Image (cartoon, rainbow, N blue to C red):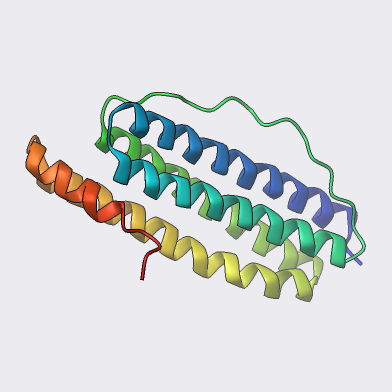
Length: 164
């Protein structure tokens, strides 16, 4: 059974993950309007991942006898100055989410909630990948600079996300 403190914190993280999905869907819409369909595809895949994260937490709350309480999702940004600006915002957001996950893991340890602690290990590992993938794209965009050819090559690469 979840403590009320853990249940509240997990519910807050469900909301944060849903907000993340909403953010990435907003970024996808931005890229669609800029005719960067590969970037849009990457962000759409990311939005779906965030919904999966929310559902993983949802399921844990329910399986541990807690109650999921959904709250309103705050407004997200809808435009960025450039693809680089959008991906820098994405990277900063992932760093923030890493902090949220780390705080949850610390709370689970403090509360002696071993099941939640173990479940959160997946998220800790996932955040390493999330930060790394967004930082890599930021680095590539910085290398590309003002090269439209480079931008279109990266757009093509990002459009392949999820394909084997």
